[in-house]
Amino acid sequence: MSFARLLRRAFSTTTTTTTLPKPTAAVKSIRAISQDLYTENNLKLLVKKFKESSEIYRFRTKSPVYEETVRRLATAKRFEAIEEILEHQKKYPDFSEEGFTVRILSLYGKAGMFDNAKKVFDEMPERNCARTVLSFNALMGACVSCKKFEMVGKIFEEVMRELSVEPDVVSYNILIKAFCEMGKFDDAVAVIETMEEKGAVPDVITFNTLLDCLYGNQRFSEAEKIWGQMVEKNVVPVIRSYNARLMGLALEKRSQEAAQLFEELKNIGLKPDVFSFNALIKGSVNEGNLDEAKRWYGEIEKSGCRPARWTFGTLVPFVCEKGDMEYAFELCKDIFKSRRVVSATLLQPVVNGLVKASMIEQAKELVRLGNTNSYKRFDLKLPSDE
Image (cartoon, rainbow, N blue to C red; front, top):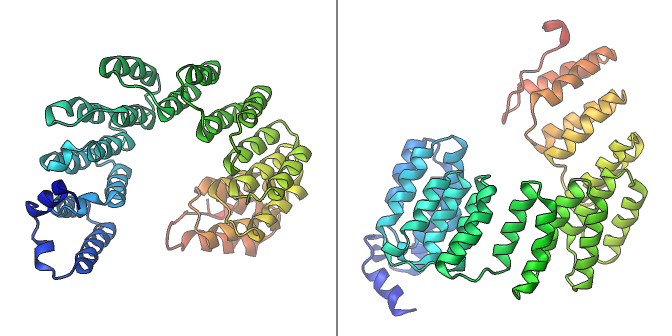
């Protein structure tokens, strides 16, 4: 243990570690504290407990509980509460360590509070906290999280020049992401050349970001060139790379080629995930092939995956459009079984379609399932009740 860490532990304001005889007991104590915060439903009390727990040094090393607390508060739009707990962290000596400060900065970004994130970055020098490429990247990442994509390029140039920071591959990947989000596809692709000029080596994240963007925006030929570059540079495609290509083929209505690519990824030892199957379902839907869409849906469970919200959102309306209400009913039962959070606007047309097809009992069953669910009530109605 470093001397600095020994000092920090010695002068910590907590009494928890001094009252527990063994380190394992201290670990359990922090775990119990974290679990209490995870299950606290009163958000005002959650803030109070979080600030009290922050007095314990070991608690302040637990990134997941910070992430989950901020996520819950952001979901509830309790931004003042987020500011309260994160500003509270500035009182601790940890704030002079770049890693801890970057965590606070990033949490503000994930909560959509960019001004607060930028303030943390600007305050670092006065708190004797060095700003390196780590905090530089965190600030750009906060821009992306806050959807301030147009600011990423400005920060990239201005902060890099001001701090004499040398961008790394993460810096360039964030820049590519921002260009993609703004629809500046040519600028995004051009970053690879800049990287190589500066001695930064593109990695699989670099290529995946571009592949997602280009295939997803039906710029198939450009995406294929990027795929070719990835292979030439000996960057090994991962399942996300293949999923992007599968979706590109789906959007191009080239389902047969997508099926061949699917077999290829299995043959090289890559395990398909739900996104792989979603792409194949999307291709079948785009080509109006109900049987193929149903077949690929059936393969999801066989593979050990679980259908996603997107899976149902794509498949259910298509099945209804094709008039296979019995299968639509089965899909809806799968939604409840898997506890996927969908909207009532996805389910109500199924109820209506069942009634129209004289499948009254199934319609009533779906209304019952939707309106007595323990995790979400959908307020579904039979058409005659409206």
